[in-house]
Image 1 (spheres, helix red, strand yellow):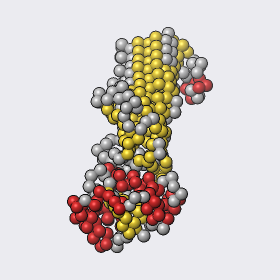
Image 2 (tube, each protein chain N blue to C red):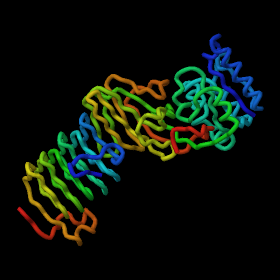
Image 3 (cartoon, rainbow over the protein chains, first blue to last red):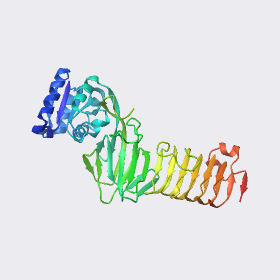
Image 4 (cartoon, chains in turn blue, orange):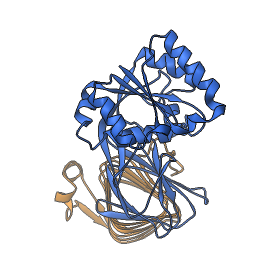
Length: 245
Length: 136
């Protein structure tokens, strides 16, 4: 069974046409299934967990990065994760902005997303972890004042800019080698002095006296926080134009 | 990894790049090529190549297969194969090498110790006190 999780912002009138279009397309492709609207649900986690328990074949996030984040947060570190890993795939239908995760998977718009669901091309994807929170794309923090502790050494950044800890690239123009299957995270530090640093890690602790770490443009996490990676944690339906091998 | 002008070829070849705005403290160990443009204090080691840029300040013992140094290194350098010192290089420490080139303008304040084939093939750690010849 396919279970479509509609994020609450899709209740707005401006999305009616898009949602209608998606539903018609899914029916045409024989992919229709159960719809859960997060707007009307108080306990989102329990609703999603229940669907996995009932044997959902595919759970499809209809929305943006935040929708995917909510679904992953409901599944990982829960006793239903075993069932999810064995039986359930995660699909994505992007609607509106903030959809960098869908872009990483080669899903450009809602119509293409429906075709991709039908093709059912599956990849096991690593999941980044910052404290108790998960991220698929990246974790970002201001660079000036940030201290990164990695194994036997620490890094201090002395210029303004940005520290990005990347699991999955969301922009094809980036010339960064990043692979969401390798069990590693790429750290990229770009400063306003126009210098760039790059290295790969499995684990680090990041601290900043003022700024918070932003995960997938959605969740803010206070520092110090430990960042790590969980290999091949989620089975995701991806497009052939995904931004990784 | 490095061209004749002692410049790094950029991001695509190096697995680790430490930019000019970064200060590293501790034992920095890599498996691939490393580019250092910033400051490093502690130790620096890789089985591959190291490029130290002209603005870099390294206070550490350095070990690599090959290295190009254009900046300042305060510590001993051990390079299993080829070491290139650029015109802006300043070394305060002993240098162990198998092959070396030194550009006009480079400053060396320490011993130059040649590693012969036998010592070159061995583990770096076992060779710490070894060298077949000493030049001053």
